Length: 391
Image (cartoon, rainbow, N blue to C red; front, side, top):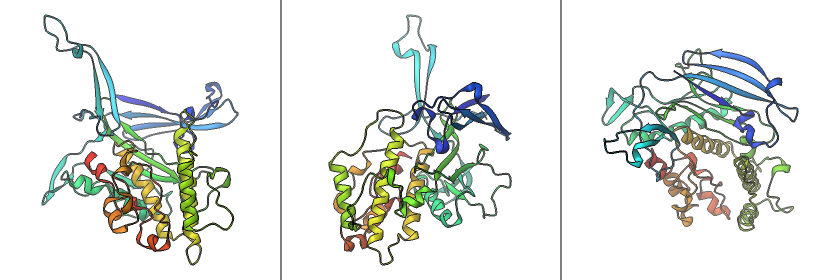
């Protein structure tokens, strides 16, 4: 059995539907390339749009597992991505008739990896038969690979609580067990990769799921190198939503600007598929403004590489959460006391939110003394209590 998934995406996964008017013109589109692997085939398609531009899309045919994973019913109290379908017909009816829940039964299964424990155990932890492995794609510069590897491993404590050892894990191009036939399009290899994006700082964490059971079979995270510019405080002016007055580049000015953003309702609601992209624009611009304030108070006017790397870790660990089956949690920040947000010892253990699946800003304290004790990106130290509970 094959699963056919048509993914219409521009660069870095922005859905075609997010761009009004950019509709594909099938008669002018073409297949650019095709590749087949042991479990999937991939067609790259160049779509001509009504605006005279082209967009690259992918058609993937995936071989489903011979043995179906045991599914797990979703619980609305936990924000899981789900696989939903209706089993048409009458089921388990008696001779007297059928109850309403026996007709056209609806199922909602959570999306999750199919983990089983092997006999290789140490104390209470066992290696999975098939571990979750993320391949740190060669497109990620060597300087930043350790930070992305760290993002993968931050999820391990959540799986250790279930008795799994060393999962999820990261594999680097320089590792001895790096597969010689690696290709991010190959469903056997989950990946995290970077690319070029001229205007935008987005990130996506898509996965391929068995529609019968909710089993996650593959994940390929993608985000642009533009995030380095964001965390270095360099962001294009035409997309910046905050503009500090001349000469006010300090932490205090940055903090005041962020307060004004929250209080004056600067967020724009477009009520269309592109609203997620707008959130990214706002978040990236705000963070870049914060980083400029941070750099202004540094002796050399630079954002340290360590902080930039921590920012990349926080982006990656959030997207990895999506590929583990978790949706956004925009209430997560309500658990952490605001009085603790500048306490690095506290946030390194608990984070700045109860969920890394929340959207949160960098931690930029109003004074230099507070900033010396704070962690700018606590999400580079731990996932939240909710995240561990959800796993």
